Length: 551
Image (cartoon, rainbow, N blue to C red):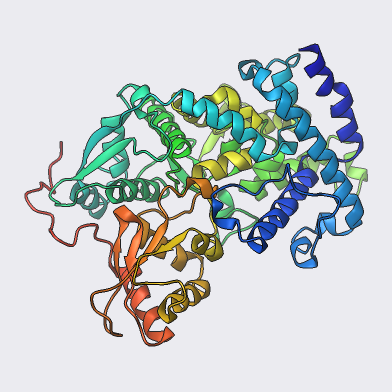
């Protein structure tokens, strides 16, 4: 153990810090070399083998760094290529050492500064994902105890509630699943990778769940979570009033949703995240670092606040300048006593992420905020902004910990956890094509198949997302090729003319593709199908189901 500590001790940490291997540049370097490894795999014809690109075996000293791959990384462009190779080689050496140490590490001690687990977690941004996955996959296999569960969902009831303007979420698909799954033993939901933790029956529909109904239920609940129909998440402040700053597509936990029921709902969201990780059932959720960081035990900082509320962050930064000097009025660009009250409320309150007034201390709405109390106000304001969604994030983490071993999560960066839960946000057509099979008589060289890939390449992100939902029932691809337990299949169509629509089988991730004669016809028919054909049952209408049941 002492030998292990010397490998990952102060020497390594100080050395990496002195060489500039802080988190952002190191992450960019690893992303760059991951892309290089992927391109090498494609060039060698091994991209389909179902594994993440290997960085541990990449010949760092000899690898080429093309300009087109380096272009998206401005922070790295000014560094000589040989220096980039040497930095990556140094990281490789570290990972070889870590690989030999990993089986001995007790990650339950990750929060103890003296522990080896804590030191490893501090280097999480430098550890290759393939190394982390060795320990992660092993522990997931050891803790797979579930056998699945049967659920019944009333889709018409959820739709009817939306038509009535019901924003409580009590009739939603999410809440129906919460009632049926949250109170079962978590061990029953810890299924093997690729298995389904529940089997769906849609009330009034005749569809049999061979995977498609399950994925449809996951996609539907994700859509509900990021809508006004379930009160758990709200758009980030950056998206308001025409939009300002980054991450305007993200959603935050609702700070006002703090009741016992809401906290229980958030715990169920955490369970869904764990289920997604275990089975690669991607959740189409757009959540900011403010949510993901607490889940891996990382510290939330003001940069995370800026990522969701650039106006509040700017106000805090401006206030902080007033504390630099007692004579702030004499400093250009600072705040003086007269201008202070123009920027802050006159009481110890702030405006929360949800636009509502929040007290910064007990009875804060009745306590005057003056120039003399500016230090206290600023300190409380920072603390409140950093902790505003902490109860919700803690509940999510608690639920996550019932499905996956959260002791190991500090080994991952928050970006890696997001990828494990949500998959690839951008749908890479080359990645999809590399995980596609063609069932005879269809061949990859057929003109209509080549035409399909051209049409998908021309689609924007939303159209690609709709296509994936149409053929698979979910809207994101797994981040790891090995998680494609089902390959996308292109089948022959019984009817072949330009007036026929494609037919999908979401349970089997397949599509019957007519042999269209031209690209324009194919594009028109596919767009019509993916934007208008949302039914998961072509054989039955919703029959004998109570739309208006208030129970």
